[in-house]
Length: 194
Ligand SMILES: C[S@@+](CC[C@H](N)C(=O)[O-])C[C@H]1O[C@@H](n2cnc3c(N)ncnc32)[C@H](O)[C@@H]1O
Figure 1: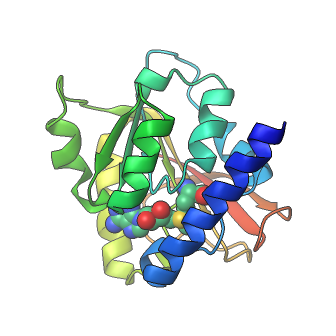
Figure 2: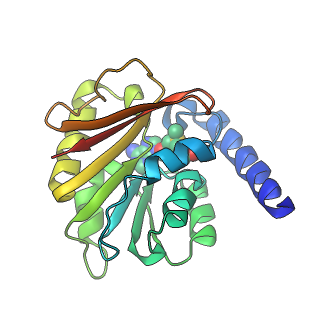
């Protein structure tokens, strides 16, 4: 328990430092709460062999919930563009494939893995999409659509808790939408399917 609290404090401190260095890109002052992370993780694919792609894992709050929910660590690919956070994640999740890079390059980055990852059963995204222009969000959504298996899901949270669609998700079917109040700030989890 004490170790868990110390890890949470260390992660929050690291997150805050990275937010101070780049608030726009980091998108939040603190890591997601365990409640928000669990609300994202419950949408994992059932098939244990399927790869899952996490976008913007930060210090690993959602990553931890995905593994706790049963995702095999070696089935996780995560793209984080902050090199400090990516290094932290590699130490924390040594069996996962942590890529330092831009989520918008996901097609190329997945193709460069050895062996390449051709498709994923879910995309779990914490990217601060509302900080990006609509055209960029739409470009990302198109790439997510291509990367997803036929019944694959895109899980995205945002701090815009009014029930509107996520930026860029117009070509997806919204299958669930839920507010998680126990988070700073409260967040809405959207789940989309092709
Ligand atoms: C709101 S934080 C979420 C962090 C973590 N998943 C959580 O929920 O606590 C967004 C994360 O996305 C990362 N990020 C922002 N733009 C990105 C991009 N273009 N490609 C990959 N990661 C990006 C940030 O560095 C940050 O770690």
